[in-house]
Image (cartoon, rainbow, N blue to C red; front, side, top):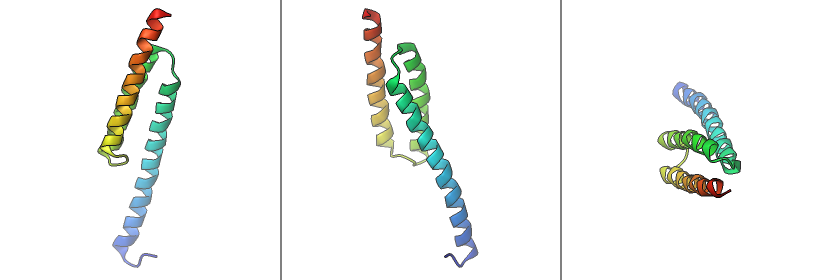
Length: 90
């Protein structure tokens, strides 16, 4: 256990940060799953904007690595773009 006042405060603040990071990470993962299950192109485009913004925020706050955010955004963009021709020909 921490003995110094500053160490006790660091434990408290890191616990708060951990909870917030976990909440944001989980929320973003759920948005990604929702986007992946979408079959409507228009809805996918709107969701993609939210997801890419959330991924950027996580990367900015070092919750996830910036390259992981970029890879996820790239894969999701390809997914959304593949939905467009499928809807036009159907």
